[in-house]
Structures are given as C-alpha cells and as structure tokens.
Amino acid sequence: MTLNLNIQDQIQDVARSNLFEVNMSIMGSDFIWKCKAASLPKASVGKVDLAYMNRVIGLAGDRTYDAWTITVYNDYQQITREKFLKWQELCQTYDKVIHGELPNSYKNQTAQIWQYDRAGNKTASFTITGIWPMNIGEVALEWGISDAAEVFTVELNVDWFKSNR
Image 1: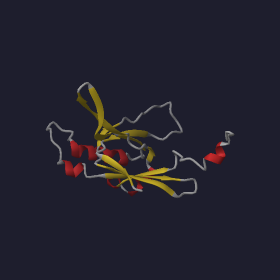
Image 2: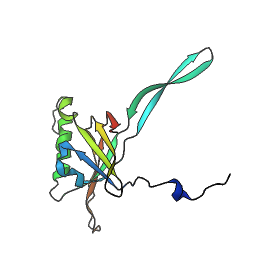
Image 3: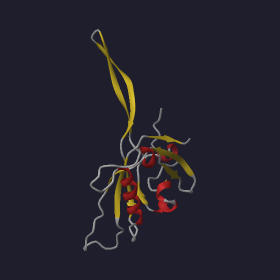
Image 4: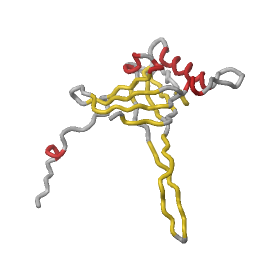
C-alpha cells in the first residue's frame, strides 16, 4: 500500500477564521460591521462518577458553556460601547442602590454567528442564547498609537448554543 502524501487531493478547502459575521439584535443591524473577532463558545460535559464494589465508571453529567468573548471596534461617538454599558446596567445599576431588572429583560437575547466560504456562501450558522455582558473590557488610549482603530472586548454569559444545520 502506498502512502498518498499529496494533501491537496485529500482536502478540498478549510474553514477560514476571518470569514464570519456576528449579529446581536439588541446591538442594532450595523453590529455585523463592528464585531472584529469572536469565537464559538467552549462546551463541556461534566463527569459523574458512579462507584460500586471497587469499580468506578464515568457517566455524562450536565453540559455547561464557558463565557463568550468578542472583540468590538469602537466607533468615534462611543455608541456601541454605550449600548453594551446600558445593557449591562439592566443587569446591575451603577448607583449606590443595589438593584437591576428582572432577568427576562436583559437575558432574553440571542446572537447569530455565520461562517462563509471564500465564494461568499454561508457554510455554518450558530445561535447563542441567554447572553448578557458580564465584563466590558477597557479601551486603550495612548498617544504613541497611530493608524489603529480602538477596540474593546466583551465577555458574555452563555446559557447554550446550537448549530442551525
């Protein structure tokens, strides 16, 4: 048996990490142009150990999702960052009184991620549910930086996500 080392015969093409769009309805229709970087959230299944007579077997536990981090371009009027801050304020206010809105007012949000091939065709689609901004990252300001757009990160809670295939 001969070993075929010509990888081009084996792989037609690969997914490109820079061919994607992210949309969140709460952020407005132009958000797809402002999301610089994103990821597909990590999903984990816990392990339940079941012991009986000196034997331990592992069973599948509950599925959990890590927080979802995106990188966002900051517009010159700070509108996008302000939208995230207002959304986060629904979760917990900034004043001395400790309160926020009910979870269905800030948590009932979804995000869509679309991936494309080099011809511009959608190849994958994902829906992320139960998102709200846990951390809104800093915006670096520095006199020595030129020819660069301001960006900030947002870490969002994820209740679950699914592939739309």
